[in-house]
Amino acid sequence: MLTLAAVTNEAYRVRLDNSGDPIPPLAGLTAARRDSAAFQIVLQSDFQYSVSVRPVEWFSRKAGVRGHHERIRVAVDSPFETQLDLEGFMTDQDDVKKADVLLKQDVVESPANLPTGVWVETKIPADAEPGEYPVTVSVYISRYGEDEKKVFSYTVPLKIYPFVLPEPENRKLYVNLWQHLSSVARHHDVALWSDSHFAVLEKYVAAISALGQKSVTLCAGQIPWGGQGCTTDRENPGNLFEYSIIPITKKKNGEFIYDYSKMQRYIDLCGKYGINGDIEIFGLVNVWQKLIPTPLVENYPENIVLRYLDESDGALKYVRDRERVIDYIKSLESYFIRTDQIGRVRIAADEPGDIDRYRESLELLKSVAPSFKCSTAINHAEFVEEFKDSISTFAPFLSCVTREYARLKEHKEKFPDKKMLWYVCGYHHVPNNCISNPLVDNRAIGLLTDRIGFDGFLRWDFCLYPDDPRKDIRYSHFGTGDVNFVYPAHNGDVLLSLRYKNLKRGFDDHALVSALREKDPAKADALLGKVFDFSADDPEAFDERRRSCHGNVDQARNDPDAVISRDWNDFDALKTAVLEALGE
Image (cartoon, rainbow, N blue to C red):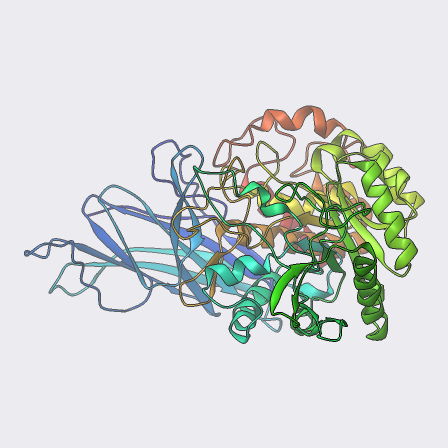
């Protein structure tokens, strides 16, 4: 029989062990117009059971000849369009299965005495009438040959405020999640840069644009990250190589042809979904190249990898001549100038370790293609001063931000024309986006960006996958989920995650606070105190105290020493207060 039916908030994570926090009850929901309101339903039976989110027939092959199987169906009555998604589990670093992936199937089965989660999200139209609406959850049970019986009902009040949330592409927050296009092709079994590949990529672009994504990620050289160490990992293997989107051909007459059509097709696809910010190009500087220890190109500061088809003999070959690399870079610059896109282009670097080599690479780049601007993810604040004349977008790591905030803030004020983002990766960080982190950490990202006064947030992952991401997303020493926010569906679609949804909620929060900041900056700062226990003028205190937050402890821990709240109710109270202030 049904032993658990609970309605809880969007930041609770169902897990298949008994160490999670008690399920917090949900008293109500608040939303702006053109917003969404989300919650979860947690179910459990002391008998083997299935859960369905649509009125479909289901017979389990595990039921045996007597049909001993409990069928549970969930229905939600809402005045607005509402989507129900069953939650799938991923094994975390502690070997505990935890809910993360949002499935598109109608039914899941569960053994007895283990919980199942259902994600419920109601979309609020921009023209919705402000006011309070009931959202009612009903749970039905039946066994084979029996009519369903309603065994649970719960009504959640939804309050809609007059403020209209701006469209993602029109928001101030600069979101830059790197896209790994080759990974998408591999895991959807489509040929690289084929029509089928672009058909699948459109699903990913639609998903990332809904977050407010601004940048386009492209590779103009082969394996710029060297496969992220995938050749040495045996415990959690994965092919993480990324390839250039620009095919090169050497004609029989010796002329080199650079085909920019596939690159432009992806840029245009992103533009179709409102992604019109920087075009970040990887593979030309700061190449992470360990697989080819001897540089292919002599007298060149980077171990750059450019491959071409030689039509004279039909063989694939590598560019080995310095002047040919320079010709390629000049041609790329010329293409972007000719197509009036040069102002958007950023030649990107990811955590340059050899500063002398990076400086030499930038000097060469500027000498041959002076119109190019650059972006880089960094670990030290002095990097800004060192490369202020060469780099337009800086993204310091979280620990760098908290350790050297005063210096970075000074640089931001000194160079107002440059974008200042921040990023996090790996694990053992607070906040972070791994499965081991509380889901509310994802929601904190947007508001933390506002709190520190930066322009946006960068993360190196959106859709990079190990060998079988539908079964196991663990990879190498990375935190589980460090490589992805979405999952590849078997039908060529994209499966979102609980982390994606909570990250989006945080970006929506940022849009609300930004609107209030234009109206009343002091009030915006004061309200942020509901979730951040540090001053906007002194976030360096964050560096000393954030370690007390225990980044790898799942669920929300009400730690009195936590510098960022991990209580969904605090974030919800902040949202409500902001919406009320915007309506005054």
